[in-house]
Image (cartoon, rainbow, N blue to C red; front, side, top):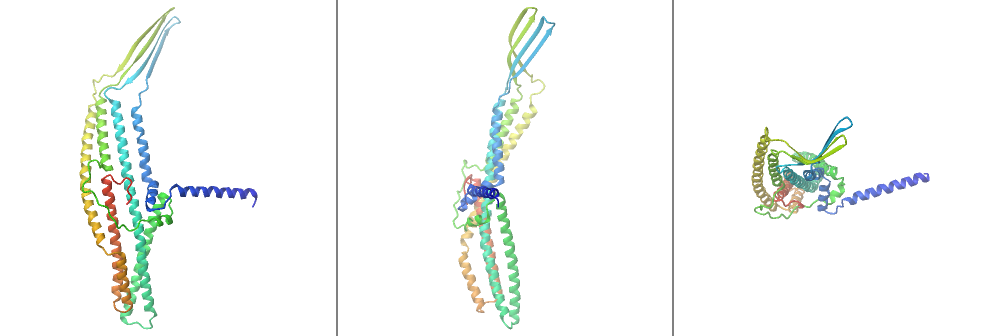
Amino acid sequence: MSSFLYHLLAFWLFINYNNAQAANTECPIKSYQELVKCLEKAASPIKIVEQNLLATKHLEHIAHKLINPELEAESFSKGSTTSETSATLLFTLPLGNKRSANITAAQGEIKKSTAERDEVSQQTRLEIILTLYRLSQIQNEILIEKESTETFAKIISQFEKRPVLTPEQNVSLAVFKMALADHQLKLTSIKSFEEKLYQSLNAISQVKRELIEKNLPTRKLTWPEIKENKTDHDLSPSTRKALAEVEIAESLAVKARAEAWPDLKLGPTLRSTKESSATDTYIGISFNISLPVFNRNSGHISFFEQKKVSASLALEQVKNTESSTRNQLVHKYYKTVQALKGTLSLNTINENHSQIEKQFFKGLVSSALVIEAHRQLIDLEGRRNTAELEAIEALGKILTIDNQFQEEIL
């Protein structure tokens, strides 16, 4: 290899190593909490609403802008001895509080975009948290399915090693083979779903699967208490968005009433006349205003007044719906948590399960009981996992309604 190519290769490796190091240190992950924050930071829905909010913040600057003055000038001449020149500088003065209404409407749009940003951020965080808990649960489900297939394979091997089988043993062998095939298919399905979840997380964050696996949450054993009632100051993103809609509707109604007033254009005028050798200069004031004779903007006023009523009704509906939903979620949360605390621990279940297998190998229990024990273990784990996710989801939604989920990681 030539010296030039050697140095070029070394430079390329150096650049790529630095880029890789920068990519790894951009979002350091050493815990479950850091993993959630990293995934949330990289999520496209959150990036979109953040950009929408940045764009909306410019509306207030637009509303504060002043209208540029208008310059009117004209000149007439008759021959070389007579001429007339005039110039007028007009400043537009909006009447009827239009500018203030525009500023209020812009501020309402900013509040609405802020509420939408918070709403999407909290929904996305909850989805990420549920996905990570589901991946953690799947790891346990895979272990259980693997243990089941290994047990059935061991039993089948023992049956096949026997020189002669009784009719009952032949039936048991066939049943165990069917059970083994069933659990192998379930294991394949679970692994496929697991891979799908990892790919979905990798697509939004480029975080490697190994790093996600190391920082998955453990089974949730402690559950926080929920406030019995939310205070009037705890406004959810949905309520704040509805409040912003009311504020926007009110400002647009004010603007519609203001637009019934014409804009006044006012400014100085300079006129100069020349006739032969004499020149006269005049200074005065000009103004321009449209007369509201045929139109008082009544259509727009009625339209936006009705929109204001509609926005107020929508706000009340959001409040009532959230109150009802919160009560349902609190009831579901406590019932689910109570059921989770009342179930047998996984260690106890595994001990009972191992005892049944030992008794089977001693010939004390039937093959049907062994298969049923494995099925019950898998069903119980699946229902327990579903209940855990339902409790976490209910808790996240309650905290969202209470406006307590901004930085909370369950």
